[in-house]
Image (cartoon, rainbow, N blue to C red):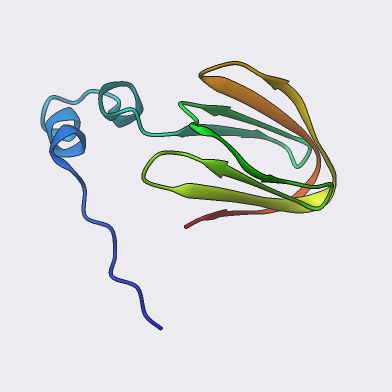
Length: 93
């Protein structure tokens, strides 16, 4: 089953037109991958699934799926989280 590509929303288009970071204006998730052992995510909406080999995080319009080995949620606040372990794949759904 083919999925339609996601179209940018009004806030995303406005951020692009004003040359502003879309994550700040539209509340989009911001991911920072450090090597293959640390993932920081801002603007998350909570953990959907948690295991040592797979973690699913709500990013609002996206579901972020992290796959790897020995994954661990090291820190989490209302807006930011830190995942460590051997990260093999990150998928936006």
